Length: 289
Ligand code: A2P
Image 1 (spheres, rainbow, N blue to C red):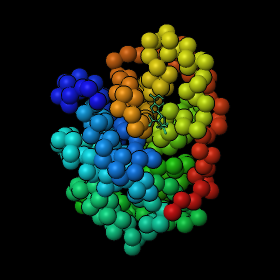
Image 2 (tube, rainbow, N blue to C red):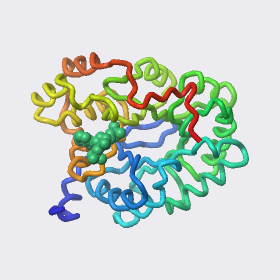
Image 3 (cartoon, protein in one colour):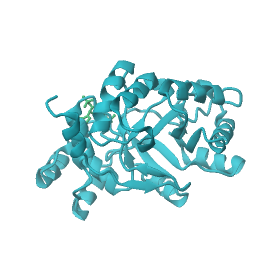
């Protein structure tokens, strides 16, 4: 890399923030770290932070929390400027194991708190997500995590959390991109003031980035197809967490705050929905331990 760390930091874009229902602020775009391993995360997280990323998303099941933690420390960016998120796996659901799992996450990351802690999947077959949520509420009240959220939850799961604990998450991180727009779920989120975060925001395992419509919008904007997709997320109020292991693409992906898509372009993108998920995972039946 030819750019010095200082040059990079002088030129970083200003990522706007959303205010969550619980009053905490979250950057409008972050770095996804799946499927980086520890060594990759350790090398790449600083590259992202020097390019302006402040939200870093990991999970116990990514197996890279230690590398993410090392990368954060070696970047020289103060922990207080970062928004660090991780997720509890299915095998750690339940009253007895949440605290142990969270402590393992904090130790591996080398931090005393998370900014957002999520249930990775509802795992309805295990049927322990409500009890897990209660334990997360306690961890939040004790200051180990600032905000609590979920990932891959359907309205039926969210409604059950509210009915049994009186509290809904402030974030639901789901698979989402222009070919898989999750409009009904997003309306539900809006009604309940749940922020939508998007995993696979660039449509990994789909042909999204090869779309001719996208290429045309990108040409008109003087941007890349990936930037158009990420701008669509941001302009739709969705927080995308694109993963890239390539520093140049990391910089490209965060450069989506100083320009806008037109209403007509947004409408074009809305019409790209096919309803076909890249992963094929259905949270109603998917079990991931
Ligand atoms: P790479 O890590 O080599 O950049 P998602 O976040 O939707 O899961 O997508 C991640 C995938 O998209 C990775 O394979 C990543 O590859 C690739 N990717 C990330 N940024 C871009 C970009 N700006 N243009 C094209 N592909 C990208």
